[in-house]
Amino acid sequence: MDLRSLPPEIGKAHSDFAGLLEACTDLDALLRLKGAYLGRDDSFAARMMDTLKASPKEQKKELGIVINALKNQWEEALKSRQSNLEELRRQRAAMSLIWDVTLPPPLPSRGALHPLMRLIDRLADVFRPLGYHVEEGPEAETEAHNFDGLNIPEDHPARGSADTFYFQKHTDLLLRTHTSPVQVRVLKRLAPMIEQKGGIRFLAPGRVYRKDEIDPTHSPMFHQVEGMLVGRGIGMQHLKGTLDYAMKALFGSSADIRFRPSYFPFVEPGCEVDVRCPLCSGTGCRVCKSSGWVEILGAGLVHPNVLKFAGIKSDIWSGFAFGMGVERIAMMVSQTPDLRLFFENDQRFLAAMGGMD
Ligand SMILES: [Zn+2]
Image (cartoon, rainbow, N blue to C red; front, side, top):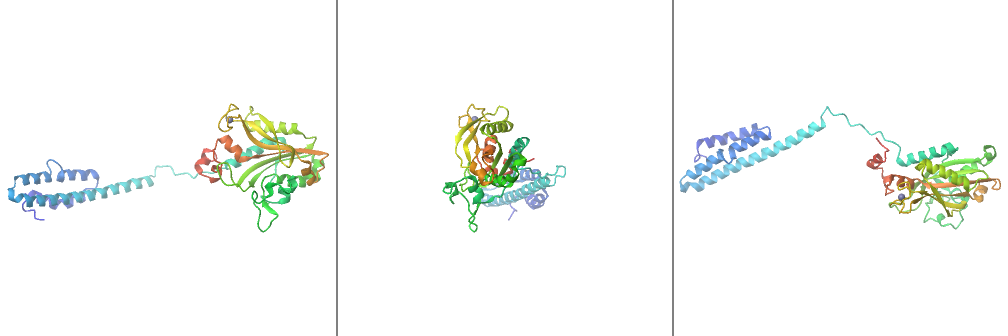
């Protein structure tokens, strides 16, 4: 570039420019340099424009080209240096974030029992003072335990492969569809000792499986808690008193229950049990669909055939049984609208449920 037609100070400024640019180590210094070279007033660019104005007409065009080229060159260099400095500043900020040794270290969260497990534990705590202990059974069950021993007829639709997961190689084996087969196992095991024990009572929590599509209220795997008591002269009044106590322990002393007749093959008579909606105290809300009541249990007096199957004399002994869906209660109490949240294990949900630190 031929700078001879410009004042000598401009030539010097141009030869100094690269060094001065290099010396700018922060954006403030860069801004000052930009002002000195390209600013509107009192800058080298302004002085060049004065020179242009004062130059003879025939030189103006050529001089204008030189001035423009010079200004463009400075502008480009300043812009590139600016983006370098900005990037440097970002990196420094990021480094200072990572290496701030004064910050307390991030603590790993301690983890906790899953909300469903805690609800099961709470149910066990409610029934323990009544003499109930916890029994468990296998999730891969035989048809005999899952259906036959529970007085479920051969042609009952629940036995079909549309509702129940059967194992392909062992066609007698299935994934249990309820926790009731634990009744059959425990009754069979304790039948020889029932006289000396004076009866049988236990709680059976666990996973169960049904061929349901996953949606906000259905899952092919969910949890139930089953309860059973066998003794002499046991009737509906004992069932009612027990459940009334349990629901008050679970939902508070104002909890109220009501029984509706229903049918399950393994009980006679059978009933469904509603609890006065613990969220609105019965005045009506979204959870109870404005009815003031929510269905919470299936129950009834143990069918004589169930006792007979286990080898217990049904003319001497009688009992009651009840079963409830754990997710159903958890959803109601926590007002969780979607069952799937309990299985996805999103830590934000678990923390909100109070299960984690
Ligand atoms: Zn309600």
